[in-house]
Image (tube, rainbow, N blue to C red):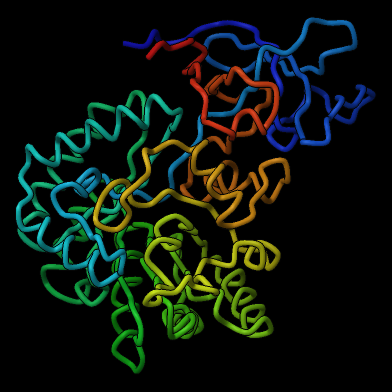
Length: 418
């Protein structure tokens, strides 16, 4: 049990883009900021809230490692995590993953999903995540027990980690009587409506399915999070359909497009116009480089020369809010992963060329993720913010990402031991 609140002080290296100093810009000296974006600061907190953030002056004691806010996972699948050993997808293909997933779903029980959830949340907690958005397979024999296990588990963990459930079904399902009943249950649980829309998704039917989903979400006040354009062909087919729907329909709830992988196959001018339309309609994106890098663009006996991946930088430049998620963990869709946000940042260096010492390289894991998930706190370390952080025993980004280190958690101002 975590004590309610705590007090304390810490000297640490903190990313400059995640800090607001006391009385910043009103005659106070600017903090020294290294080339890798870290600056030495002293943070003090009282009764679980930060009360002061100040630069360390020359000659003062050295920083005690690096301090980051507790981070976020904007896209996970807790119901199927750790199922690879029983249902492997040795081909590494999308079709192989789907087939294995369907077999796994047939065998789910409440106890199986509870065990997966507890194992996942133990890692989530230990690795310094404060919130997880999880998509739940919500159609078929394993749906009921999956929702029961995750909602019950989320209630038990709510004091430590926020869980945001998303109902994952084919997008056409929301137009059925069963879909409307599911939406009511999801809304009562404070969840989001999800849906899978895959290529070729041409013609009127996908647009009608999207209209049904968006109208239902609006009626219940639920956010929307789509699996869309997770493909190596038909570039942006789903998003073009969504843009046509939104041109004629006003939606008040947040819309997130997860994956958006095939957008990278568009020509640059077409991508630019699409990104600007997405920004205009406040459509957000969760990029998922690990699973997409593993599944998509495969060729027989050849290394893929062009891999579908959400075009993070181009979307950011157009004003789209982009977060990065870990997606699948040791299940038929991806055989690796362990819910460690630092490992995800390290992998994204190579997969997506995101450097955390750059503002737009760090924001998908911090402030943009918080905005997309509608978190009360954006993760910026400032007076009045929660004293929720993780301390790393390192002095640089290189040390933090070379091999994700052990970390010490600060929750509501209290240092928590694993």
